[in-house]
Image 1: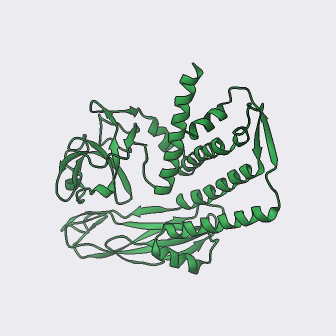
Image 2: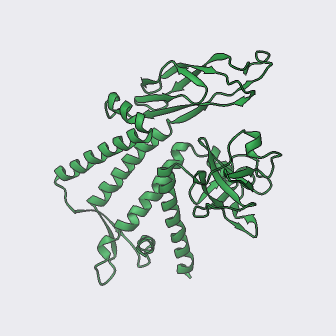
Image 3: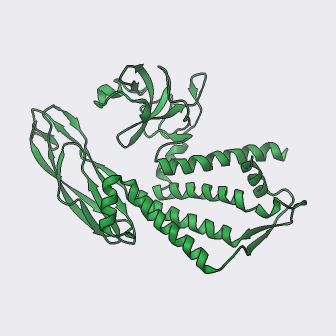
Length: 355
């Protein structure tokens, strides 16, 4: 009876470990996500957690897909299929996304997967996403993902000594190299967390109309205007900031600067309104990095891709930790022993992960 409960639970933990790691690395929903708005009501209500099949990326009309537009992930239904891509629409919306948001049809490479359904009804956990959105910070979400990853590492390494034993040992032995690996993963995770939560895409919403100037945020076609943005370092240590302007943004007063812990910087953004009357929301991309590398090197790497400086920083820290381990002279000594019963839950985890 215990196996009927324990092994499905362990399999779920395994899926969450893999999904959390992939989601953090790829910055996209993997296996599950939740609705941020009421656009799919009543099929998927705001806050409902739903499950994703990441292999189903060739949907048909009527399928519910998760796709990316800009930096935002959306869950909507396929309304039509064209040569240019997929026309999408929320069940609670009047117009398609292409009509209401003036976006192009969704290409296949922008699709994360198809929502898992049974007889057309999505499998979902009602309202739990509301807690994830309001009850846990972005830092907490990534730390939770890291906790699942650490559980996976323990599953592989924590019971290593028992593999060659003919009989099960009465104690779980954790070696120094295992604890060092866990501490290293935690440190790298904290660096990644501090970086990711400092990144943001700040939208500047305005309308181009012949009635420009009658209301705040209304501008004439071709008119040039400025907007101030305040960027704050919410960490307790300094960060290097890099600014990338979006479409219709012609100038940024500062594209690179350094902020100490808790400091703020106000930048001026210059925008030229397009000739076409519509509502626009160009974004100013803000990326921040811990100043472990010289700013000149970070700047050059940033020009390649915003992820490259972070990877370089993590690589430098990893190299330092590896050298520190080698010069410490500490080998494979046991540093922690935990008594366990014959039916070890941790052993069950390790056995599942070895399949």
